[in-house]
Amino acid sequence: MNLESIQLHNFRNYRELTLEFAPGVNLLVGDNAQGKTNLLEAIGYLGSGKSFRTQKNSELVYLGEDFAEVKGSVYSQERNQELRWLLFSGQRPRQLYRNGVKKKSAADISGVLNTVLFCPEDLMVLKGGSAARRRLGDNSLCQLRPNYEAALTEYNRILEQKSRILKDRHENPALLEILPEYNTRLCQVGALLISYRARFYDALSKAAKTCHESFSGGKEEFFLSYKTVSTVEDPFAPVKDLTDRLLAHLESHYRAELESSQCLTGPHKDDFDVTLSGLSVKAFGSQGQTRTAAISLKIAQRALMHKESGEIPVLLLDDVLSELDPGRQDFVLNQITDGQVFITCCEPGRFTKLGKTIQIANGKIMEN
Image (tube, rainbow, N blue to C red; front, side):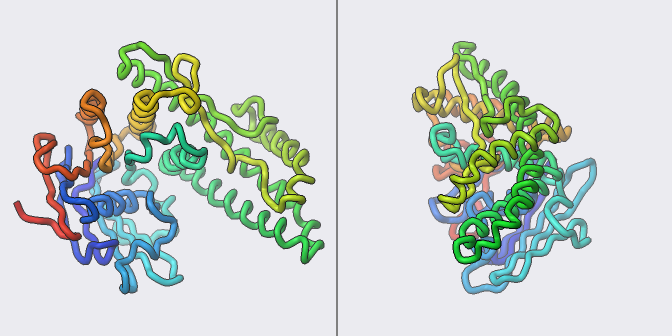
């Protein structure tokens, strides 16, 4: 899987850009705020329809312009393919084209350009709140399983509608009559999410364990445990059983949800915990252990996606090497001998031996 070239029009700080890439390592060099991360964002968006920095497509459009375009030529699934996104500054819905044919959603380009992003914030993902860890899992599953993305989208839509009912029921008590219908559907879709997540995290834990053993020289044992609502004792159970368990948990929180006017329970609060030799990284891990475990997770994520699809995902390293000590830098670099990689860096000459160097300044490519 290779991104052979990309064209940007009015995307972030890029007025116009046409750029070809090497099949191996591409080093994006330049000072801060010149557009290096914007380019990684465009690459990630091209394959997934998602930005890792914003949920608003309008923010991706150059200030004052009506629309932006992201277009790329990709070699994957044993053939050349073209992806094209049109994004608009107003309320107009975005448009997606695959090989010139208009598509309805990002699910229609699943597997064409898979990417794994690693940025400085990910180094401390195990120490922060649960939202970042859920996002890590969701981003991978959406690329691996188009049905998961559809279920996640539906779950979030139902959750938002239920939240509105809880908040508006004081002014309109009749809304409570339809609340059971929303609860039932929320649990049905939520059970699907749990089923997908349980299997993904189990595979991710095993892959990261192997990686971390190599990283730590066998001194620490890595284990990832998936955490969902307390009534779900076996997340690998049939979806029907999971639905019943979720409903039971929801019913026990019915009064509390009414009093708080908030959705208090469900897979939207799922999390996972990583332990090293039995000790929680979040509670007891040093900064070095936390970073090592996070690196193991990201490398495992890429390996797992490779195993599932048969193609190596494109790796996006956003200024992450500068955050690591030399030993961890070497380990990461030793893991990127295969597949296409994009690395942003502020220091010219530091990693230039890795592959093709692309100098960026103020949204433009500087000639060497």
